[in-house]
Amino acid sequence: MKNVTKPSQRVYATVLCAMLMACASPAPTPTPSTHLTLLPEPDGKASAIQVQSLGGGVSVTLDSPYTALDVSNGRIVPQPPESAASVAQRYPDLLSALPTRPTSSLLFAKTGSTELTEVSEKDLNQLIQQLKTLPFGELVLIGHTDTMGSDSANDALSLSRANALKQRLVASGIAADRVTSIGKGKRQLLVQTADQVDEPRNRRLEVILR
Image (cartoon, rainbow, N blue to C red; front, side, top):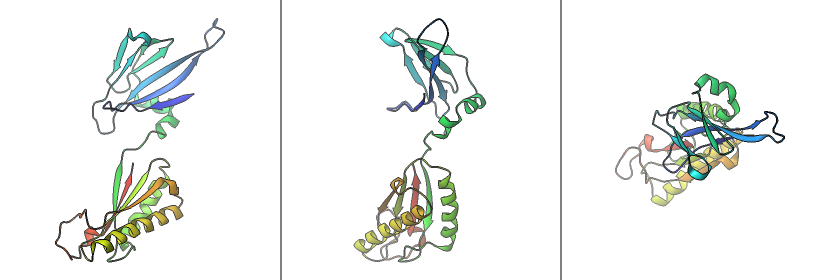
């Protein structure tokens, strides 16, 4: 059995955790053990994890990329550091299942419409192909408008833009339960303008993968 642990609560360490079965004789029943490897953070920030033995007698901290240890029968046994290549070779499935960091893309719409601009249509096709290679994670679609029209009309239009994009993503094969649509109207302008200004950069859709 293999598992991946992502510590939280202010410890931003990514750890590979593999449950191994020791089969050395003469023990009649295999003894479960856990192997931990600390992975580097993609943004280069420092990370660490502290492992404590049962009873709290021994504590070991992993604070360098690819440092490792085993835990068996309540005992902590430090292991030689691994490498990126060896981890990738041993745990390809675990690495591919790690959650991606949030990413954001922008698409732009035509005036008063849910239809995308010509350039954004091309960008959407590329984005769909990228999303198909990332079967995990939640997609949040946030529609925005310029300052033309009333607040209520812009609220409705921004949500319609997000919903229309969701329909296109689902039609392309993206699971509907991964996608959330939100409309922000003209409350979060990319370019600050006065009221009743037709600003193309504010007529946008944010696509956030997290």
